[in-house]
Image (cartoon, rainbow, N blue to C red; front, top):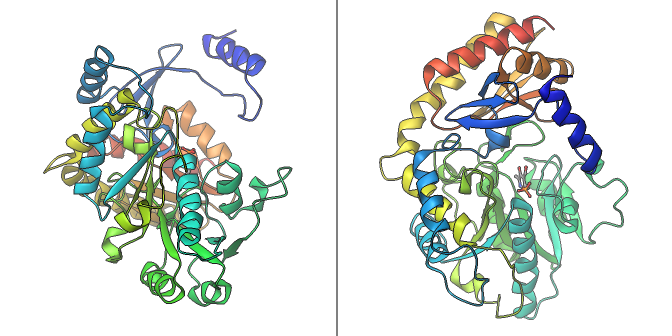
Length: 398
Ligand SMILES: Cc1ncc(COP(=O)(O)O)c(C=O)c1O
């Protein structure tokens, strides 16, 4: 039995079976390369599901983690600790927000946002509790966030879902208008739907939602858990739309792999989160916050974010060229922005993903028929060429 298979067998014996049995065990990573238990290397073009934004074991993040690990690991939020204050100061400085709530994951950041939206209206004497979300959207696996998730397969067996959540077709402002009422607390949207296939919102849609939210008096929550922290070429993917959200959530890339999530909001919204209303033991943990602060400092100013833009364009161009070469029988569509892309196939993506892995490339699915690419922002052109070469062969062989 191979080393990978032995580890996979141990995985399957003791872990709950909600994750499929893995084909390989990853034991080490450096930059855009990871190594399995048998020393085989892989080009990582999925970045731990859009998370490892600066590459594996980035020296600046390792140094930040090491330094903090000798100072303080945990205090709880009963005390102030400087790493989370420093991180919040940076996020506030670089966004519309005045205040930050720290969580440990994307789901928890969204859970906080949805709860805050309800509380905000209750604090203003309005019984608004309904949420408008979108078909195909993904917001997490807690009961509230999975209720907001717009793919019913995720609800199966967990019903009844949180009441008052409605789903509109993504990109349809009239459907949103029709669902809006005096009971609507918030609209929640991903600027690009990641999990269901890297589907960017149609041009002008975010601006229309801003208008609808303003007319109706509800809040606009932008879920940037997958798109945030520079993945699409700006710190947040909503920025080019010119809108100002009421709440933004972020996680995944924020810590480059250390678990941390954040909810960003304005002063007047944040203030209803009075002491005791919400909380998290680990939220803003010093180790995680020190890593995330180093991530922000590496992205700005004139850092990785700016440098990565050209490679993000290049990735898009090369995917389009690949689509042309392969033709529509092999590639139905290519979508996305910056370092978040999808290749839509006519059939199941799973065999292509397996072939890529066997040839030394890690990519991930998004919906049944899409191959998703979410490489670290530090990926080089040469690595893009290598990865897309493997991907093209794997698609051709289908
Ligand atoms: C847009 C979006 N929101 C929320 C989540 C949930 O994040 P987490 O898995 O960290 O709870 C995800 C995860 O894929 C996501 O893509």
